[in-house]
Image (cartoon, rainbow, N blue to C red; front, side, top):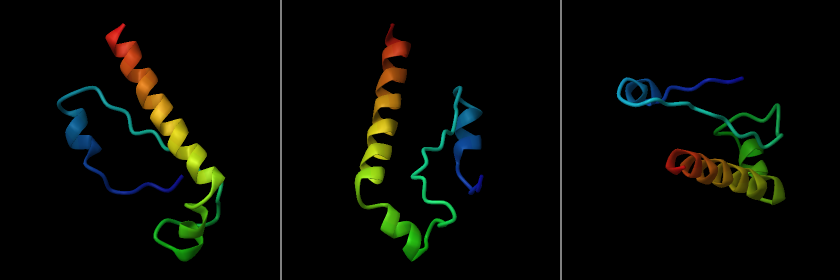
Length: 65
């Protein structure tokens, strides 16, 4: 898995944190490349957005419960 620099380490010093990845199934296309951008349009990309939103909403529900 490709790793990139984030501020997640700073966040996790203050609150519990995870940094999940949601795939588009576009390997070997890499971020910031035209081939990756092409995969970011269409049904697979829409599904990835839905999956991320659903996971975040379910996490919030778990927290509130």
